[in-house]
Length: 278
Ligand SMILES: O=C(O)CCC(=O)C(=O)O
Image 1 (cartoon, rainbow, N blue to C red):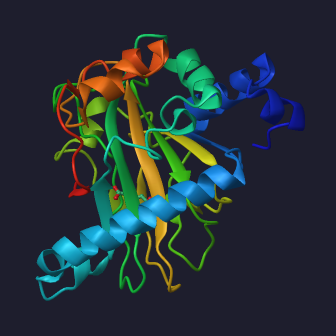
Image 2: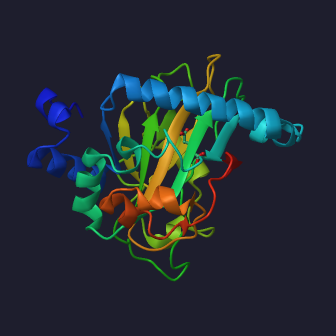
């Protein structure tokens, strides 16, 4: 979706825009708000992310490369948890008014962040990830009904994403609406079905916001450029999940009231982590 100049300047979406975006997530599994973060903010996030990634690869790259199939099974895809510190914990990342307005419409007001991380397609990948939902079944084999949307991923790409640099591929329109047991080990295998289904490679400008139901099938694809393709990745959840975001007390105390509410389930009073493998 394109957002109007007036909405971008006021940082407030019109009610019809919120309604359209929420409905698109409900029926399609995702929505993209194109290029809504200011370019200077994206540049700041990109610089800091690149430094964190360089540090991480320097320290842990060897371990991940160890198996003979190549880096992370040859996908060259890497998820790293980010430090809860500037610029990653900027209000435009953790509590973007556009994203919260849309998420409020779907999850109500009481949800919280349950993941603070990133996904990067590194250059040189030889194959795509397996097609997958991000969370598995909630109630197991016995649950033959579809459950409401309870968890939404929020992605911000830090570079323009196109066919050449490993776009995420998605299977929209229904893969988030399946009976709960489909997301478990005894449901149909996405890898077998996906090649017969309609998919889209998600192209979007840097600083876009992608909001998607965690259950929508997707995969990371190989990056054929020579520059990393990072996506910041947060999850907003209606119920508690295991989590590991460490937030120093002083940082937490300085958050807005809304951000405090969003991060209330985290490890508050703990030191900021180094970038860590997911
Ligand atoms: O390419 C992406 O950003 C998505 C990667 C992904 O789905 C994953 O690592 O689980």
